Length: 414
Ligand SMILES: Cc1ncc(COP(=O)(O)O)c(C=O)c1O
Image (cartoon, rainbow, N blue to C red; front, side):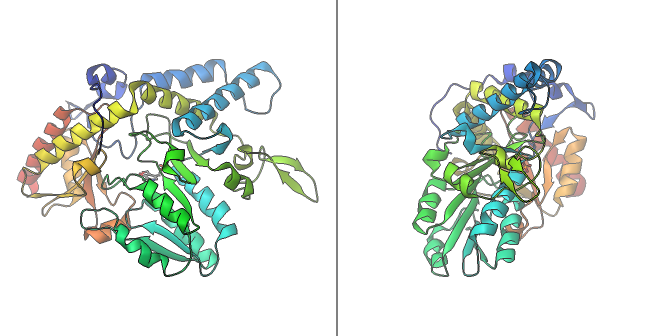
């Protein structure tokens, strides 16, 4: 990944923020190499949530009493933090959702059902996480639109030379792609895809669940129309995520979930809907989780996204170098300069679940499976991979332990 020189992370100090590192697994310190799945939480985030529950908690947007006003201010401050984090034009462009998955479903349903029809094309990629694949496939089938994909090459990078051919098959209405692949770490050229999508008259939907924790996100520079992100992947709590959308598109859309809070007035004959962003936030939201999401963004922003990115890049270079010493390990994905801190691999003749099981006995947590990218696994010709993924608290010694662990896997099962 292209990164500028930054001050190295003080990992020893940062690691002191994470209580999970005190855990022993099989009597060994835990090497947590599964941050792409979900990240661990620093004390600062947990403290903020505890303090919010103890001193500021009530339902939001309802009460006129002061505690409710304080709770609403905490929740809306978190929205402003998310808006600043992605460089939204205004906080009302940020909708809190349960997750990145729900954010993507919101767009697929609320925008797709109204705007897609027979003859239109929805374009996703062969790299896509199921969260940005299945909703579009489903809505395309409901509306009669075609569902097509941008293929990848053998390194797991998008074959952009196929775009013109894809455009000849019918009007493209949606281009939906991840910024960073959760299985291979591939970084996709969103600016270029967004410009191309707009030339086709399509909207550009970006799944940034895997990118936002690791690199600066600027929705205006990316030129996209919608962007989904998730709190639990960037040191925040689970149960909350966000959708950023261009205000004019969100304004024009019908609501997704219906009920309390998202209405302006309800009568026996007719209901009218609230203004942005509340139109899309039916019911009591995940209030303390949103506050924790904001605290997590503050935490990683204070460390600095460029420094986090550089740290993960260095670890990825190191891990790829060490793993490529093992001629019975096959690495998937592009070179380190064009990927985030994710390394997927296959140990010759041994199923990834067995690899992960033996590594667990060594106190090493990695993910084994299809990583919610079954079409990608089919393209790679495997049913699953083993995946190590890094975050700001990961250190080279954990990569060394992974490599030692793989030698044990080979010795026991190879
Ligand atoms: C690329 C990508 N998109 C979407 C998701 C789903 O995110 P969430 O867990 O917030 O629904 C994930 C989670 O693994 C992911 O890696």
